[in-house]
Amino acid sequence: MATNINKEAPNVVTETHFKTLVDSGYQAEVVCKTKATKKAAVWYGIWIIRVVNKERTYEKLLVPARKKLGDDDEIAVRTFKTANGLISFLESMGFTQVNIPMLEGGRTLHALPETPIESSDS
Image (cartoon, rainbow, N blue to C red):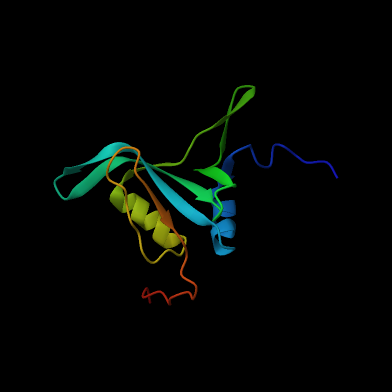
């Protein structure tokens, strides 16, 4: 059976596949790319998310989707520029606790709860 390399680029995962992986036991690793700063009541920085297995032998960067640019495909890593945006994304994926690294190079791991908690959105 031939593999279609256009379905998934090496070392990246789309948001849909990310959700499937974390639902099956993989973890989300939040990586701080720039030191977080506070302006008014909002924390700004640049964070990325990787999906990893517990043994850390499988690691892929989260990407929103491929963008067609001329003859080449360009793959952009999904970045979060505010702590609120990062929290909102992780909550939408089912995470009930979020720990955000604030210093450049900081990393935190997130796992889904073993038993899903009912959403309070009614």
